[in-house]
Length: 135
View (cartoon, rainbow, N blue to C red):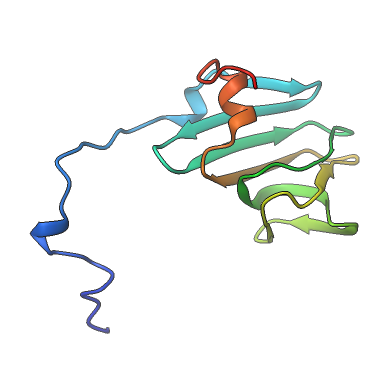
């Protein structure tokens, strides 16, 4: 085992007085963004994890946004397009999407459960949650 003082910080000069929060994401009310596409977002100050369920034959159309995104498949399969390149993603695979790069996804005959991570939190999802005013 390696000594990892840089990773496990213990400098009390950098410690914050804030508190964390515990969330049961699977008990959050799903937001249906388009028919068959359900979001259950968990929002932090500077990051968002969005638990996403696609029903069969559901499409998230090609779009782009200023937030950086990482998506990873937990179960099922998802056809993902990024900057014109299309790949079928399955459990254990991820895609990194830089800010403002066109991307979209769709399922075929199977469902998909995947997680999207956004930095900073995705404004469009915050608007759907009622936490931000539409621009």
